Image 1 (cartoon, rainbow, N blue to C red):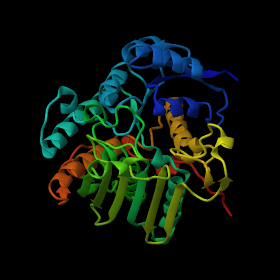
Image 2: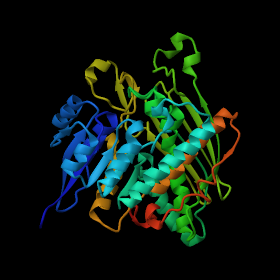
Image 3: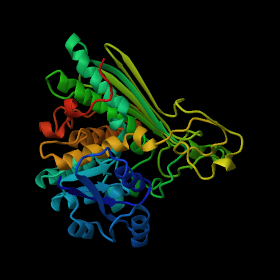
Length: 425
């Protein structure tokens, strides 16, 4: 059997870059396929060199363009600071990279890096105009965009899709109410508390996670019904800075944000009058919390991804665990905890990168979480800040979604190719 090599590039050497590199070594076996970590780039060359040595990447680069020209990747993983997402995506598309894996959120308001100020409505319009340019470049370059929302790739979300497919034969399959949460005690990323680099705080960078599957499952519902993906049409939200305004002692166990929100709540109304509510915050003193719940017209499905009680550990002395991180963002393993072995599987990263590899290998295959996901996510997030500034009043986004940008079928999910997680009786 001839061996095919896929060249993979990684843009960014922080937390997301680390789990991306590690995830490619955990990919499900694909006969005759070798994944070559061909290049990594960082704003500091010494960081790229350190990363390359640690993860067995062939070459470290000082610029993204140089990496694209030299490594010529089949997949470019853009997992750097948010302000570089847009420029790097355009560069990758113009270089003809077949698959672009773009971490969340897709882009930030272009006025932030320019040092401008504007009201939330202006920021929304200008951000969507900028995202239009980015997605147009991806189309023009013939690239496939995978919007890397790992919550979409949870095994539980794949299971819900399987159930929706089966329910159609009984005249069921309506997703009525969804809610989710993503929280921990404050991002460790240096750029997180800097709007010009991060684009926003907990609403923008955490609530976006459960928002992803909420948008995705409504898209899938519409497609399975034989119509069009069901889109979000209006948003109400609140974005707050809680810890900043509390006594100094209240911030002992948290990273206290000075410039971005540490709590975000979003309510999304869809065009079929169904609803989703998602929360993101930096107030989880016990480490990461990833949960999602779906109520349909035939079942309720609750995902307790992290923590859950599949594994339980009692540790009288944390020193005996060394530097093992038994659950993401857990500040101490002392006492009773619920470890999450192989978090990269449970958090959807392996499924996500497997989708990217399949899209690189198969010309007719496109990402499940693609350009439409990126677009609708961005519209909801930017309208959320507008709503928050207006006292949480509802803000319409239908001009961007149902009446806005058109997406061909290849930029929407294909639920029948998402992949099974259940056995058959």
